[in-house]
Length: 475
Ligand SMILES: Cc1ncc(COP(=O)(O)O)c(C=O)c1O
Image 1 (tube, helix red, strand yellow):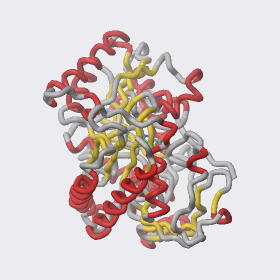
Image 2 (image 1 turned 120 degrees about the horizontal axis):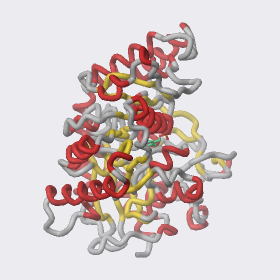
Image 3 (image 1 turned 135 degrees about the horizontal axis):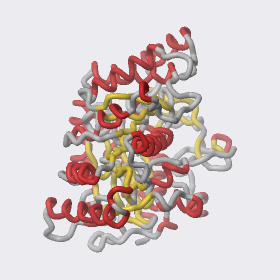
């Protein structure tokens, strides 16, 4: 069975991984329960905070798949809201009718930003939302009489999606590699990420570090010609490409100020870090730095439906006046899908009514504490970083020099396999966090309604998996 991006690591599994024994599965983890092309287990069902593969195992979901299942699996209340909508109508083309669920979820999103974001485009995937953000940035400058703004500045060690525009914006070396010659390289320009673990100099204050980062962006504006830049696109807390790396305090505010100074838009991609994952609904609310455009996905509908959105701030929204013919030249068949809207609104109501953002903060602090206690001194754990229930663990060959492991060793994948097979906990593995496609990390992203007991169990199992995997890896 063919599959795209079946694993968070997109390089094909090495023979080492294929030959690894099935450990203590008691013979149940046999090939009949696997997708033969990919050697990944076939799922039987998912319920609450657990995955149940066909081999009879019960695996704790400590990452919501790809950071998606923020309320766990199989909630009857979310399913009921979808079924209720299906009984009314299952589809509406956005060119013909508006729909109440879409209006309701859009109003809810606007309110969630205190009206700072004013318009909502509802879509199905993060890539679509980023693609729309790129195109709306362009069209905004046509409306406002600056058609020469054709450049975008984005960062290395970032991931914005899999379509040609969003991949051009991405700084994920491995995912770009096969397509590099056909990406939109002439328009998408890269600056470095904001990664204090690898970039902050000994003795350098956060203020000086941020100033250095801002100077780099400023130089890029100058190099391109400041009035040719349409937008700067970045993740406020970098997800899969860097392993849950929050921007250093002051960075977002300084970048926003520089964008304003040069007349460019700031697009914050919150597809992974947004919708509560880091403990505030929107990641930008940590520092109250309002973007001009914002993308959301993943936790928006928690995986009950494929949901994403582009949120539009006041500057762009007020330029977009239908009366003067300024309609965004963009659209998808499944845009404004009513069942997507119903699922997303229900998920958000549950988070709101149950005070789950507070739980994200409380359990996030516990997760951090236990991970640091158990793994902080491990000779191959270089960094533990994150915010809320969004934590990354970076592995290094040498803790003093921060030298990463050779990519072929697939260290993150080995930790992920040990976690799943031996300790029955699902984490998300990634590569590339050290730059140039090197560096391994795993991400821990449990559901927002997780209990302290479960958090402690997850952290302990992840720590055991790391210790176990490194028994096999020769540094
Ligand atoms: C920050 C970010 N932006 C965009 C995307 C693309 O979203 P999707 O895979 O839903 O297209 C992702 C996916 O991981 C992401 O993490």
